[in-house]
Image (cartoon, rainbow, N blue to C red):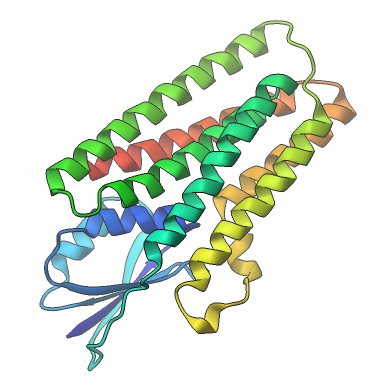
Length: 264
């Protein structure tokens, strides 16, 4: 048995973990995968060569680099029995906040909230693919991933056009208070998702690590919308809201491209 350690610089939250799991699904010489999101480390326990595994990880363009490979006597791996339950939980949280942020974004005329709702939907897609593809053939899994990826891109493109329309038009100033309050609760929701998934990895990880939380893209986005709300209020302009919306739509597009790569 061999143990290979990878550094994955862009593994910021559990959605990247699920992308990696889906990408490596079907590689027969993998015995177990151990994810340390807080330190952006993936440990792969495997038989034989690492070449195919390393190639698959690099194809995701997550800033991956192999650190080391060594022999190990470890051969007893136990998967968390309640993994599906946890995935359903985080899927429910993300999809609920997608609906909440989309609704309040439309009401408050905030592109930042609407864009963040799409980011929540993107994470929901990743968790849903992991759940609904269980036990299905590799071809079926790739079809599900392709459908989700294209759907995300369509929504992101619509979002970009809406940002452009609002920038060129004379839209009302978004409600900064709604932006900040909803984004604050979304920040808490993302923290909860990270906590319950990381907690499931090991009994030693029952506390929430600040380094894990504050390096997450999702949390950075939430903080960005909060800051945009403050700037909207202080500058009496919708430009900060449009800027944040554009950045988030771009990040969602990047995530969709990663999902599409799983279908190749």
